[in-house]
View 1 (cartoon, rainbow, N blue to C red):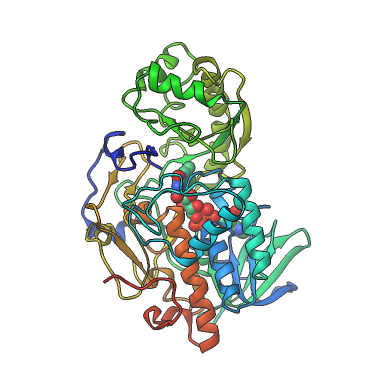
View 2: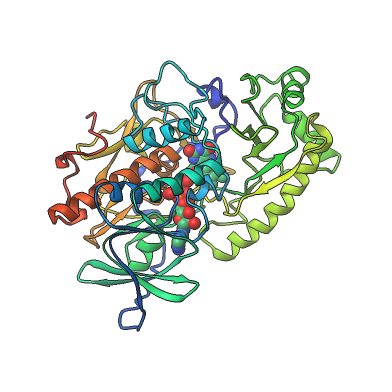
Length: 490
Ligand SMILES: Cc1cc2nc3c(=O)[nH]c(=O)nc-3n(C[C@H](O)[C@H](O)[C@H](O)COP(=O)(O)OP(=O)(O)OC[C@H]3O[C@@H](n4cnc5c(N)ncnc54)[C@H](O)[C@@H]3O)c2cc1C
């Protein structure tokens, strides 16, 4: 994410160079086609582990919202997650905090419910409380460990069958439907049979395995966005850190007061980091992007939105690159941690307390669904009759050349149509989260956590509605659903 000051979420435009201007929209078709990975297990003798109404693959913010909402609306649901925690990048990737939609009334009921649960555990996630927004708009702080607990709690309350340590590896299809998802668990291979499938893997894995057309990377460069591998440091004396940046380096970035503040590499602090290169303590790559947040509920700990690796060297759609990036980032993390300890008062006794268990992939594959969202939809602040949510978060592309941050005029927002969550190929498939049907720049706006959660919620509602009314999810008229989570402003 763009480093965004907690006090002044609007001023980030000046932080990093706004580079290459986005090119015209004529080359949607030039987006890098992703080779089909279709592999059919039809006919193989694989036992069925569960038979449910809805099978959600991927338990990130989008998938968890989809599973909980479908179950809440009466469907029997299984949530297949390869890790041991729900939340995806929020928890495994240590991606903290949730970015602001920067428009009021963007919260859908699932988000309101989630925030209430945090309050019940004694945490007010609205650390900004900007009066210009109500019911959404501000950044939120979801402490990863508490979020993991609350997600489990939500799934238990609504009787979602959560299957941890289960990896989706194949899709069986027949007559324009996905009939089962093939997964690998400790028992070996098994099938999940369901009426409706929701792809929330972030990488469009279920869709690609089933044969849905997908694209990857930028239409102009072919590159994916930069990846990061986040970490946390404990033993931090926050007041000393705060004073160093504000008083010594005269950086206005962390204007907000402890206990909640952040520091970043800004025009004011650049010299401080570059001197570290001259002393041989860090490399240019290590400090390419620096941002650190205090964590609500974890005093003495800071969350690092770095290191970031070059998209020229490491692609998020190359399996070997993803592994090499993790190893490289781990080395960079050590150097950064030592640099902080040596040079930032308040970090003297600090230590790496946690590293991500999931690589920070901002963008990889995106499906080509019934509606393909483009940057023009973003810049035109497009409204849709079948809109499922709204946001005004900027187009936020992390790239070395194509470093683009574009915003809408104040008060403007765009919407996401339901049709961007469904495909022409499969009547019983919904796709949610960062891999929905969109071009590279549009994806860079829709990918933030609140928007992913709202999309997941919409998919859960549509799945339950389709089941009850015997309507295929890829032809559902979202606007006709009585209890839908969002009504278009258009
Ligand atoms: C470094 C970084 C910083 C970011 N900063 C912010 C920020 O500050 N604020 C913000 O709002 N957003 C931020 N984002 C974006 C946001 O976190 C993601 O876009 C969002 O989490 C995407 O949600 P998702 O549910 O689509 O996918 P993910 O969060 O990626 O979740 C996908 C889930 O699917 C599971 N999965 C994948 N494949 C399989 C499989 N084959 N079988 C079973 N399970 C599978 C994964 O384990 C994971 O749990 C950031 C992203 C990155 C990478």
